[in-house]
Amino acid sequence: MDGEHAATDEGVSRLAIAPADAGERVDLWLARLWPDLSRARIQGLIGQGKLSVDGAAVTHAKDKPRAGARYELFLPPPEPAAPLPEAIPLKIAFEDEHLVVVDKAAGMAVHPAPGSMRGTLVNALLAHCGESLSGIGGVARPGIVHRIDKDTTGLVVVAKHDAAHHGLAKLFAKHDLERVYYAVTRGAPKERSARIENVLVRSNEDRRKYVVARNAETSAGKTAISDYWTIEGFGQQAGASAGRAAATLLECRLHTGRTHQIRAHMAHLGCPLIGDPLYGKQRAFKAEGPHAAEVANVVEDFPRQALHAAVLGFVHPVSGASLRFESAMPADMAALLAALRGL
Image 1 (cartoon, rainbow, N blue to C red):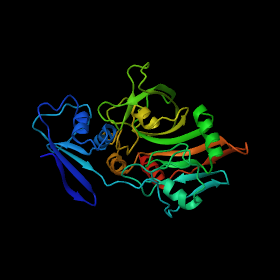
Image 2: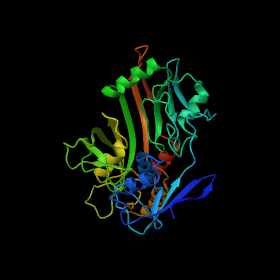
Image 3: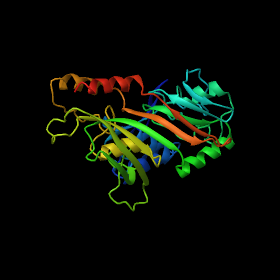
Image 4: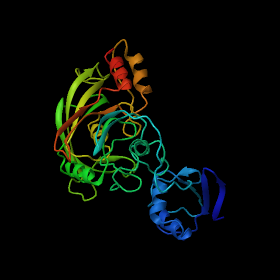
């Protein structure tokens, strides 16, 4: 019963029954079974939740195949090789012939990725700038020097040509620029301000997440450094010692630019971002007081991680001018803060 079935516009499913001699790893077995799919491609599909065994998702490529079990691999339709221009409105903070600074809205990915080739910042910039965007980032990521998460709002700088791209890339590599984020957390860190410096690695339990490595000497991770300051605390956390806020507005400054850095660091401190679906959505909001239940509803309904890239400052890679841009708090986070102040 090995082969394809249910081919639709949404993709193709392949079925296979694992034999007793399938081997030690499910990705190796499937790569041998279907030689037209590379092992890396199969690992990527597993990471996207596209492989199931007897109806349950397979989460690790290294899992041993279960003899007699029914495996189903879903193959999405092929994506176009290059992103297409799309006339999507953009909020431009600055633009010249060398670069553009965009104040990105929530829900917009920065660059195309499998399963999300449309509606990205790159698609919008291709329409806005034409074909002048720097090609160093590759076909799917023209002009992109850095990124912020899809549901994080705020400032992103994009290069219009290769010389600007090289100059900006050097600034980011040396961390020679100013990046300030505002984050709203469930609970509060123990210290009102501190530097967090550790090594972030992929989680073994969920490959989408990053966690602090137990062994700081590991070669599998990268050093991540964040500074934070408490701007405002809200209410009293139920069941906690007096003075422990139920929620906190933090200013965070990045000295490195690791994936999910602030989200992972705050979760590590036990105060994940409000609305974060990956690092803390499952944690209940705990507050005391007459308005606690009302505010808890607002917190639980917040649809994204409460994180905003508020300040971006750097030296212009061509002119040498010092540039600094500020983005106002987005409306949804401002409404969240107003509700929290009701505590």
